Image (cartoon, rainbow, N blue to C red):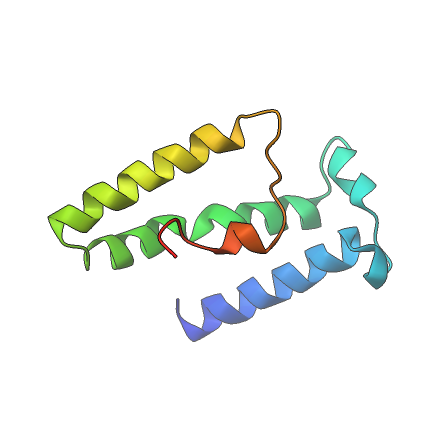
Amino acid sequence: MTTRERQIWMATKETGIRLFAPERGGSYEVFNIRPMPEGIRQYCMQDVQFLPRLWQHYFSKLTPRWAIRVEDAAKDRVKLSQTATFVGKGRHMALGPWN
């Protein structure tokens, strides 16, 4: 990420947080408004915009064995996310499958 990309990314994130975070004067209800407000649309878009670059950067460092392990773990996490008992928030979401 270039310095300019990082500045734009940070400013967009701050705008989005102010729109939805109750502690910052926002409301989660903003995600239900249609059409979606531009600040929220940009906030959400940025959550995935840099994923291809991140994937390329980190995946290129994996050995073939680790690439298979990562792919299997990703598939398992997607399956888990589709269950009725899935909880998508919390510290457990920040941890890898091999800790």
